[in-house]
Length: 359
Image 1 (cartoon, rainbow, N blue to C red):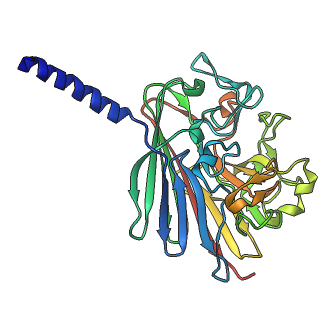
Image 2: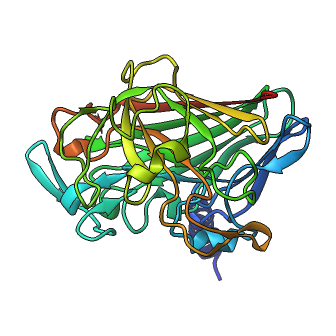
Image 3: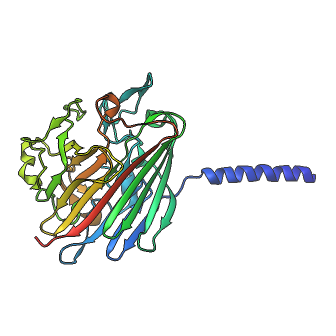
């Protein structure tokens, strides 16, 4: 074979090899961040939290996150345990919206509506590990995902990163997204189910909670916002003062699954969204965010779900506090906009501060 032909074959092979290597899918793995007896495990499947181990008021360690023993179980999960959800978290009514005069029809994966980004939302994809530093005073990991134009029906390509970091006895989560060629709705959320008594300690109904939201966005029978913004005072949704979840949950047919409009709205600075206290263990979790809303969900539909160590989770085995934009905001002009225009950045910050108190 002439040298020129051999050279040409080599060049073609090199181009094919590097193109396929660069486009190959990352493997699914488990990663740990550890600071003293404060330990966090994650997977790049759905950029999800697998476990978070904390001491109680006696110094006894426990995992306070519901989940599974195997990463494969997360791939078949329908509860969104520990996941990053998007491109638009929560629900979009009718699985459609209009933006700049164009009607977009989305994947309807909950009846006629879209939930947490569709059948294959961000919780059901493999994220790349962009950075991973498990040393020093503030270990962290950053996951990244490129969402293509038209994925699950959403317009425009979107580059997304999620960073988890341990700072002191706190966990910080920073979600960023940049629209690359079109305006698009973006509303990312974190979907861990918390049980401060330990993931296998039973239900969370005795937990005391305070939510810093004076209003909610009421929903219809399909859990789609009506467009109204209603005060919580005099309703079972009033947790402006700390109270046990059990003190009001029986007034509702299934439990809590509602968006609170946080006092102070969206801002660049942190504000407190909620505080949860488990008196038996003494563990306290304070959640701060820059987002306008938080979804309070009490795991109403968990039923005989086998979790870590073979423990079987039941209804109210954990609670979710999902900081977010308002649900279905793309169809309610009176809600804070979640539209991110080309070249602009979306930034969602959360800080989970953990502590203990004796009583």
